[in-house]
Image (cartoon, rainbow, N blue to C red; front, side, top):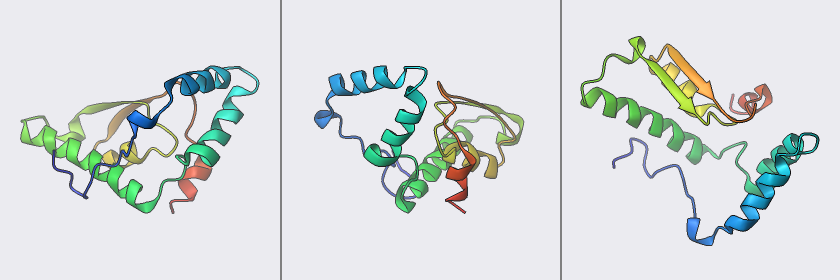
Length: 125
């Protein structure tokens, strides 16, 4: 697959991931009182996935553009008249905001938790 802005944005090292630790961590973070704040701290301080580096930001925006280009190449209707669904919208909403900037006027965004926060977007401006 060709990406408009270089390499794919996801640099996941699945081989080195300890899935048991990840499952236990998600189980702890699902506790109602301590879960959401703990999850946010882990994402900010351990995983470093709340505020993305410029290269990652550009990579995710490029991925959104690649999706739109693929739809147009395969005869999809104009983006402005379509409804897009984003499952796992995340903290920063890079892909939905890029889609909007490219003419997608209607989107449905979903995530298991309310992760998106205005202070995250302000760090990108």
